[in-house]
Image 1 (cartoon, rainbow, N blue to C red):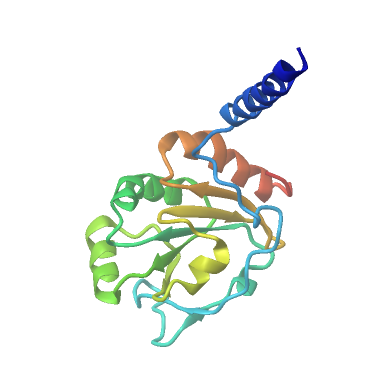
Image 2 (tube, one colour):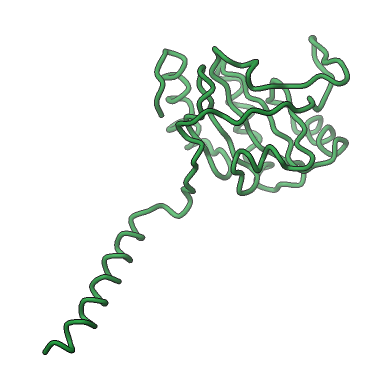
Length: 186
């Protein structure tokens, strides 16, 4: 009788572990950044365009956004999923006052500028992360990824994969509205 209890115990432990694993959404990747300050960095701005044309050599530092809710979308011209999410980002930029910054990840400047010209530019500015170091600091698994950063500089949400209309309506817009109203939680 005792020799059957050990295999039965191991089997029950495996069933419990499997059941626990099945309750998690495999598309939701954990992020150690959510609830913590966004990493500090200084990156060059991709393009000089618009009424407040950027001077050559202009940089962006997240510290300059203190006191404002903002978003950071990691994208690349070679990214197929980025192409799919781009119309949603254009809509979002038109629907909210929250600035959306792009982080152009491991891309060539020419390809990125051409892509934005052809597809439209939803970004307040796109930042150049040519070697991917800032992406590593953000814990980026791949493009696209989107981060919501509150007025205190704390990451409040991370979207792995494309922003869809459903994600925009059910998660991003309500969160942005709450953060703008002075909320500080996701």
